Length: 113
Length: 112
Image 1 (tube, each protein chain N blue to C red):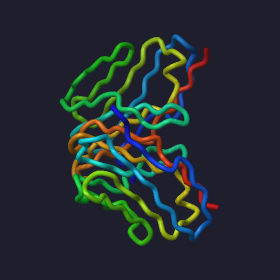
Image 2 (cartoon, rainbow over the protein chains, first blue to last red):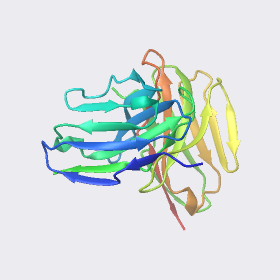
Image 3 (cartoon, rainbow over the protein chains, first blue to last red):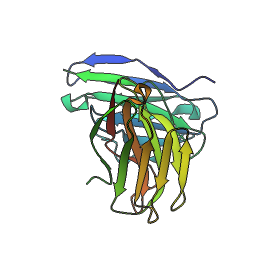
Image 4 (cartoon, chains in turn green, yellow):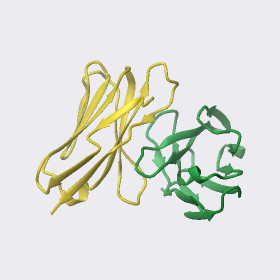
């Protein structure tokens, strides 16, 4: 079974630039999550999708972050414009159903300089 | 504020020693999950506990959910170098929505 695929693995951008991350969840998984993990901390949920609908985006900084899951399969997370404090690993995860075991991708390490 | 807390933040043990990490919340947790993240890796699911007082074992790992469902623990017997990593608990605090909130993790180092 293929795991959660994310790209790119690494990204370095200057502040105020924009960046996009892509995630392809495990086939058949209805729930997709985007997490932000700052070095030395636990993952923090940014947004959760159930199929192509948003379940929870309460911690998504909507003035600069946006996410979509077209057709209920793969998803993109965008940051525009980036700030220095956005430097983190962005993890995508999927699960078969709501709040069951989550399978994480390798993550995208973002450095904003 | 921090909904889910973990102690200790770091633990260094000699190979063969036991290790325990504790997860605590000020409110009741409906479910709790445990994940392991190797250095440079991504979180990998270990287990989910649902019932008050539940105890589950996976080889050398023992997971426990407190009677009041406000705390949980992960105990590793006779640590090995392969146990190195950060262990996260994630719980759903009552009145905090429907999603798992991750604790800050306990980083385990095992000296050979």
